[in-house]
Structures are given as C-alpha cells and as structure tokens.
Length: 537
Image (cartoon, rainbow, N blue to C red; front, side, top):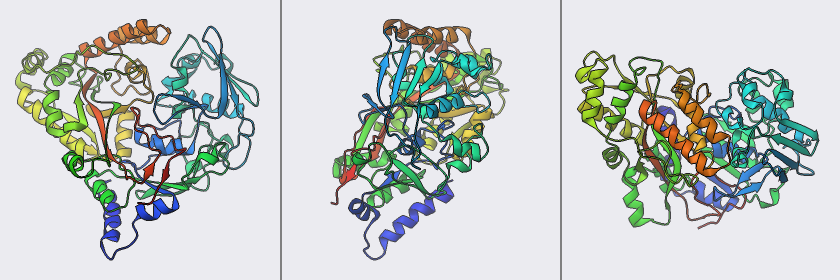
C-alpha cells in the first residue's frame, strides 16, 4: 500500500514544485472542489459491509439514512424521514419518509427501500459485521443468528410508501443514534438484483456509473489508490444547502507525505498529522491545527482460540506489561491519552472503572504460572498491524519493546495492507491485532457490543456468560443508572479476562485549510456536508 500511496502524494508535490502553478487548493477553493485526506483506500462502498471508520465520511456523502447527526456529532436531525413519532412505551418508532424523496437516478425512494435494506443487513448469509446495531429491533437477533427464518418475526414494516415502522423488543433511548449509522443507509435493490443479488458483499453495483445513492453527492470517479470523486447530487432533497460541487477523497496512509501535500496546497483537510509536526503548527500555524479528543479506543485484540492466548493468564500478562503513560509519551504525545478502561471516560456521560494498569511484576508472575517463566517455551508471538508507517509502527514498536523488557518475549510485527488486514481480522487468522474503534455514536454500547458471544465484530472470539448477561441488561432498559452499572460489569469482565486490552484513546490531530468554512470538530469524527464551502485565500 505504501509503495502505491507515496508516489501519488509525491506526484502531487512534484506538480506543485516546478514552475508556479495554481495548486489544487487554490483551484478547488475557486470551483468548490474539496480535497480531503482520507487515510485508507476504501475496500468497498457497500454501506452494509463497511468495516473502516475512515470510509464513514465517504459513505455519508453518498448515502443518507432516516436520521442524521448534525456537524456537532450530538444533535439528531431529520434525514430521509422529515419527522417521526415514538409511542409512549418507547417501543414503536413511526418514520415519515419525505414527500418527493428520490434516488440519484430520479426513481422514487420509499419506505419499502428501507424495509428491504434493513432485512438485507439482518441476512445471516450476508454477514454484516455491524449487524449488532439492529439487536434492539424485535426479533432481529433471532433472525440474524438463524433461530427464525420468518421475516415477519422482525419488527419492521412499511404499511404505505411514506411510512416506515420499527418496533423494538425493549426501550432503547439510543435507537435514533443507531439509525444514523451506515448499516441503515438505504441501498437501491434493483442494482443488486441485476448484478449478483442482495447477498453479495459489494460488487459491480458500487462502482462509478452503476452506484445509485440518495445522499448529497453521487459517485463520479474511483481511481484505485489515487482518489474517489463524488459530485453534488441534484436530486438530493436538501441540494440547495449543498454548496460544494465535488469532494475528492485521497488515500493518505503515509501521514508525513500527507502533511507535505497539505503544505504544498494539495489538500484542504488531512486525516492525521505526525506527532513531530504538532509543535511546529502550534507555533507557526495554530489556526490550521485541530486536536480533537474523539471517541476512539485503540486496543489489542487477543484471539482467544489460538495458543498461547487461549490462556487468560497469558493475555493478562501481556496487558499488564504495557506502561500506557510511557507509550503515549514516546509514540503519540498530544495525539493520545493513556487508556485504563475499554470505554473512553465521559462517553455518553459514563465514567468507567479504570481497571487496566501497568504491573510488570504481576505480569511476569502470571506468565510463569501459565508455564512460560521469563517467556521460556512461549510460541512465537506475532502482532498484526494495519499499515507500516507513522503512528501505527511507533505504537507497535513501543509495545514490542515493553514485552521484551517486562516479559522476556520477543514479538514480531506483521504489517499488512488495509484490505488484507480486514480479511485477516474477519477470518480470525491472527494471534494479536492492534486495532482501533471510532464510536459511531456517543454511547458505550457501541464499543462494548464487540465482546458479546457470536457478534460479527467480536474479533477476539471471546465468549463469557457474565459479559453477555450484562450486555443484555444494559440493552433492555432505558434507565441510565442501570445501564451504567451493566457497563461496569462488562468492563470488569474484560479486565479479568483481557480479551481486549485498551492501550490509548485518540486525540485526532489534523490540519484544516483556513479557506474551509462550515467545518465542525466533533467527538465522533462525522461530517455534515451541508453548509461546508470554500473561500479563496
């Protein structure tokens, strides 16, 4: 991936470095073409199977669900439904689809499109990794896990073209937040039916010239490992407030090259910023520097089905051997905060127990008790990473050093291209993953769901009854005090079993050109494309 991405950015820089030519930012600001650093090359543009937070803003430019987050990342706004009613018992949500709503090809968008999409997301044969977001819907989990094959058992209906009804199994005060996620973006079923069926994961229907969408932009061009271009959708219901004519999303895996491209006037916004550049921008260009404590936990995932990490003592030893304060100081600086709980404190008003700590003596004791004193006899340990540059490598190398110092274990690093990394995680073909999860909405449920038995996103393959019971308790009540007690129970199980070991929380450091107007920083890294525009400088 790096060999492909660096020449792309290098080409942008070379073009800017010869004779004085108009930069992409200058021409883009004049013509309302937004150049956006996006970290990863998308694996696909099928919203039901998306696994990468870096693809979220691209998908959000193309699709829109029933409701959306405003640019503040907290306020729920109408999307394809202009209003909704919630029954007094909190179980029935009735959404009213906008009159005149259409797809990008001009065909009517109706409640049936949402019904078909929701049922596609629950199809066990599709294997949506984020399908757990649908669990509060009555009958959804039984259908997803094969205990029911009757679509009528799921609490979804479209009684008329402009009414979509969602019935829950229990009150879920966070339900509207769940419905903002990409899992529930409608997809145009005639395209799928004509090119392989509704159970295909991505495919030809997601490519330029074929993708039919309903968001503020339409897919115009996709140059692999170069950029994805989307252009304003004249059929979008709120097209009058979409001021940008085009957005180009650039894969920018190398953050140093990305920063140089920004300085050369080739990007309006970067996805990340190298740690070493933070003090430079703080001093010389503070208006361009943004550091936002986002809701993202970065953690180690131990595959509990593969020795030696099938033994909780080994997992716990590897977690206790990490000095999180030292790691953040060495590898991240202001761009990270040490993580002593799986959930970032303050998420949805929740302050978790701080159970993950540094205790090298206890770590060595546990490793010895598991039969590997001083690391002797331990099978070769491999830490799998997404990419091989910048922050990822810096963090991994510090962890590698701490395991050597505190456990006597010499781990190898396995850096993979993004698409391969996703595949390895999906197929559970790893010992330890260095992962990160950007919460789709500000509620602890989003991350804690990854630990329940059988969840498609449970890369650890962990299964603990007390964790599952706690999740069921928090998912079946609207009482926030009871929910937080259940969150504490799940945190305690993870601290005891260490199938996920939190390492640090992300403070997103990135650069925004002063000509970008309407941009809003927020904790879930969401972009509301309406109202953003560019002003020549």
